[in-house]
Length: 218
Image 1 (cartoon, rainbow, N blue to C red):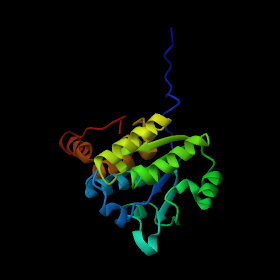
Image 2 (image 1 turned 45 degrees about the vertical axis):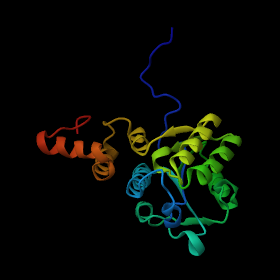
Image 3 (image 1 turned 180 degrees about the horizontal axis):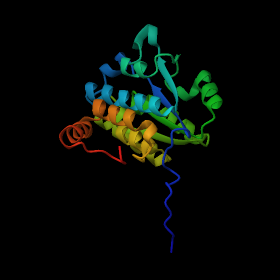
Image 4 (image 1 turned 60 degrees about the vertical axis):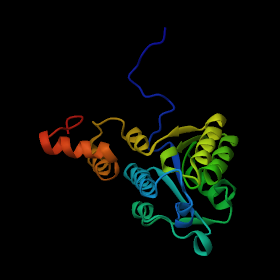
């Protein structure tokens, strides 16, 4: 008979056990993305980026052929990391770029969290490569997109079958917070949820405005 203890599961993410890699959030890639609405995609990408900033999660920003073809990284992401450099590549598979490997090794985290465009190429490539090299891999499914629903879903299937763990953008934010008694990040997390958290954010706005609701004694 197992014994319950008040401790989180080992597969839950913490702010400092992973490197978030945001891949190819660029106009040219978004133009052909059909599996998710462009407004929702930008919203979710911004939610993930700002969540990482709030918690100080190690983050790598990367683009492909920025100047010659694909365009600059989404402004929602750059706004979260205005001082961060963006690594531009020629490889479709981010993991095959030596600059990315060097940055991942320097950060030294055993878990990789991926989000970007397109799921079937630019996310599958690094996911399978990182798994093959012994990293744990998480994929933020609703912050990814592809040229069709079929392309996105089959890519997610392939990564999950290989051992990647799927999650969502709001899940990423709340998994890093995980306890409303953590007051240092409470205001930033609920503020971000109100701005980019969709219906959940509306619920926070309503509850606080109408009857002063709070979580964890806040």
